[in-house]
Image (cartoon, rainbow, N blue to C red; front, side):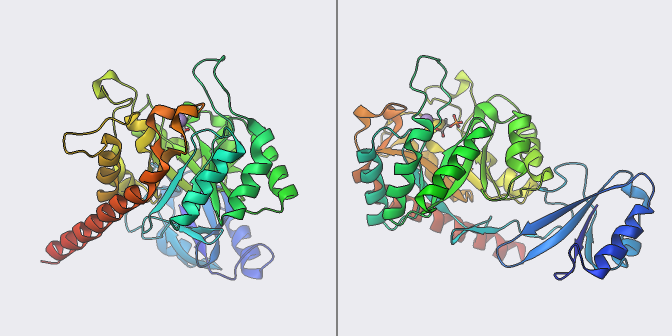
Length: 372
Ligand code: PEP
Ligand code: MN
């Protein structure tokens, strides 16, 4: 059960103290307090854990300071879209708004290699009106002998160059909680020219200690990729780990499933789960066509499979696209064969705009028919 408090009620307020004393008198219940910073307001929420079936909604709504009470089902307690649950999970980071109503493109380098390539990428993004990117510094690789990313040594120039071109948010994978400290330190001594969205990759979806550490901070929003070999339910529970520690600024990423049933694509494209995640939870949903499709194969109609997959996800309501580009894919140290070219950026964005328009028209059509 979640108690949502009136705006002004927070620790230190008289109603808050009376409420907490009342909750302490309830048997076997544990109360966890969360401060939720939404796009328009910040509220305090109290999660009651234990045998809450015995509590009536009416009684709980009458407690001091309580605005509303939500009875949650067992599944995805915080992130779930429970019966009668209309609270949006939306937030602003560095002036960019996230939620199920929005769509943002994060085009960029799978792995940072040289400052020149970072600069060419950021310049291309700026010239095409983009304020978000992806830049991999810590790369989890199958082989221990493969390039592992430049790590902390590239952070300063990545942040400085991105800031110079007006980039507001960089999605960057971390594989260890210590990477958060390295990112914080680099932001501090470059004067925080950009924001960072922490990415948890598919190989770490169930690294519960990493999830808890990332969930304990709210400075950075999180892109959590689904696990490539576990069920959707297991991956959604991984997201719930982040939220249960206090960070609800989560985008859930679809990136394809590892099975040769998806051949010749690198992974089995799973973008039909976009509406499923949006129905089961309140998280915005990201698609990663690059790691799903994994190549520049072109359809008989001349459209790249990767661009077709992107359009499928966007037409189904995706809220974010993470996509690999590279100024010179032949020189890329990771995933060059699936990178789009800089000259394809305006084309890619126009194709996305067509698919987004199709989604909005499809949703309006469905609403019209539902209204009878
Ligand atoms: C990536 O986005 O660079 C990446 C490694 O993705 P995934 O974790 O989905 O394989
Ligand atoms: Mn990659």
